[in-house]
Length: 157
Image 1 (cartoon, one colour):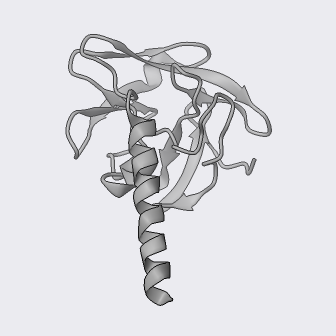
Image 2 (cartoon, helix red, strand yellow):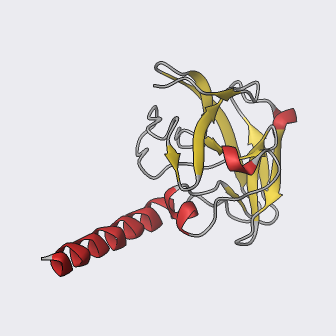
């Protein structure tokens, strides 16, 4: 019985990783393309940062506004907003160009930043307006959305 439960848990973990890998495909800009950081109003959270598809962007507390720390299994669940060589990060909506940047990704390449926070999406957010990762303590730390001013929003949805 224990062996069957272990096998089932392993299969579920493998399936989750596969879903995360498929969901994160296409979240990297192509060389010379732009990475868009925009804004959207999310119920109970207000105006938050989103990507070009309207998916909510998150910051990871352990990054400490210094560097990307969500890698490997963490990055499968929280895909970083990758910036391809030659690509630019652009602001739309209420996002501020002056707060945009990028940091090196330990896994290679660069990750878009806002107010020095590396930006991530969350695989459970599958459509615009969702913020199911808000306030989660997962993969080694807390996850929050950011306001257009660059402030961390800690409100629970």
